[in-house]
Length: 136
Image (cartoon, rainbow, N blue to C red):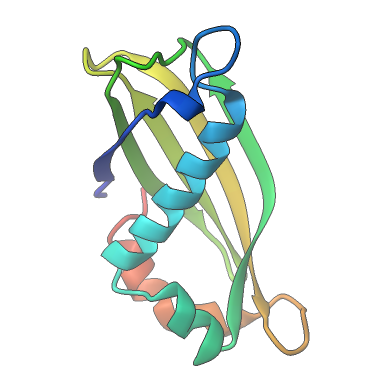
């Protein structure tokens, strides 16, 4: 199993009145990580939607916060797939600081639906081999 790893910047507008990264920013980081992981699988999100008529829909998001991030921190992101089913997948995320300390972890369930019918679609099976590279 391979994890995709990259860094995310922290900008001043990410900081809330408490002085650390606001919780909503983690949702943005999850989105960035999912898109980057699909790109690493050589799957274009626009081609998936337009050509294959498959839409990835988030049905569940869980984030556990261990330590806050502050403006001076570096965010190291890890993302991988923990489970691949017929019409859905579980994406896993870890966010570490520059010291390698686990600051938060997340999980999202993604349901793949048919763009036209808006129903779950098994068409994602066509890409199962690409998901295997990042499947734990």
